[in-house]
Image (cartoon, rainbow, N blue to C red; front, side, top):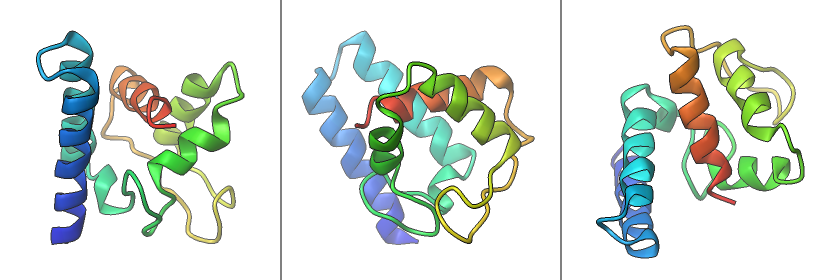
Length: 112
């Protein structure tokens, strides 16, 4: 459990340095990471390495060529998915609003 928290903090630090700690983009990235942590996304996913689910970096890379990638991922986040990344299904995240799912999907696509 600690490694997931450290990985999330490290990703936030990298984003802060990369985007500039005071920039609006850095704040949006940090807010999306916080949302992912609060909604338990990081219980199954890591930004950089496969865990129970795929690394979010790998998700972004897989869908980088899709024009509708953020919309596609938003629906996968809300509705769940099976068989795309292996045998472990991703449950529907019914606790999220469509706007929260869109925020998360957009953030994931920045990780490529």
